[in-house]
Length: 429
Image (cartoon, rainbow, N blue to C red; front, side, top):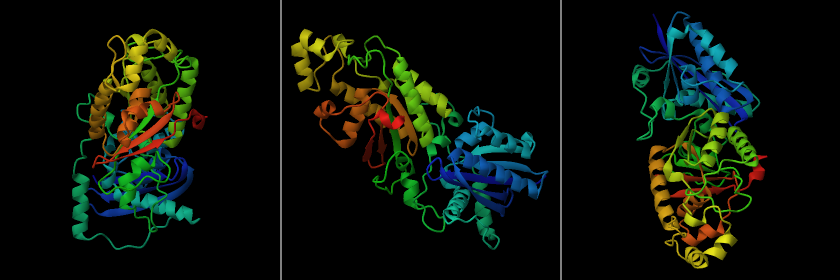
């Protein structure tokens, strides 16, 4: 029985935006390219384009030999996991495409493998060529080309046979399959693709950062950064009253307003289509916010205790004016010295910064090259931003973060960071 390898990819310049897909069918034994196809599909999301690429690749393989077995290789974790039956398909635009793909070959003759993006360059190039053609008002046409040389075919076969690199972050309890990169996170904004369809190296280096930022993020030549999109939880009953609400208090849940804010944040993040993982503080308000977003994006939520809010000790539940009245000396010391603790043995800002820095380093190592939503609190977000900017501790008192606001920090291999602040829930409406 003949065996094919199908490599497929899709992308959207805007997510949703002008989109296209590419797929290539290889002979599994020789690595020879048998056929390739690409198409500009108009305005669509990354996920839809990826599914369209998969469907086109399977159909191309079926035309070559309907009795063959097929091994699909894609750098979309979402498509691989959903087509393998391990993840549910929730989005209405993807369900019919997945059903069509599942019917091309009998399920027992198709296997799926996730591969890193740099091992899916052929299909990626075809997808970009299709989008370039669409930008010119044309459809992609296959160029006339000679068959691959023996050496080239052997290299392709070796790549097709090599196992995917492990993707699970160190110490993560879930499997590599469940935790590896997921497509809405990719959010491939390929507007910078140069003529001819070859993706620039700089585009690969900063793709994660650029998907959450406006122009102005500088390219790096040391690999893709770990990009943390920082989401403050939605309002609780204490938020509009401006009461201290840390990790040592009543642990309130979201209010109705807070849940609505979380829904709007989820919708905005779904439109952006860049989030690959979600990590939340263990407190109720952050877990609830993260859960609302995760449901919309079809992702799981990991909890990291390092993202919890500062413990404000005896000040929990009090307003600033009430603390000023009851504990004036302690409050003055706290405002003047990051080492000072709130009354009753709370956590100093210096201790919070130490904890946040350690959490940052752990997550940066675990999620290098990926875009992660961190659902956390005012002090952790301000601290991450302060540390990224190299700002002094007193800068914490000069930032304001609205409930359910978004910010982003991209961390590069040399320790440098780029910061993007949104800090306004109006953009979520």
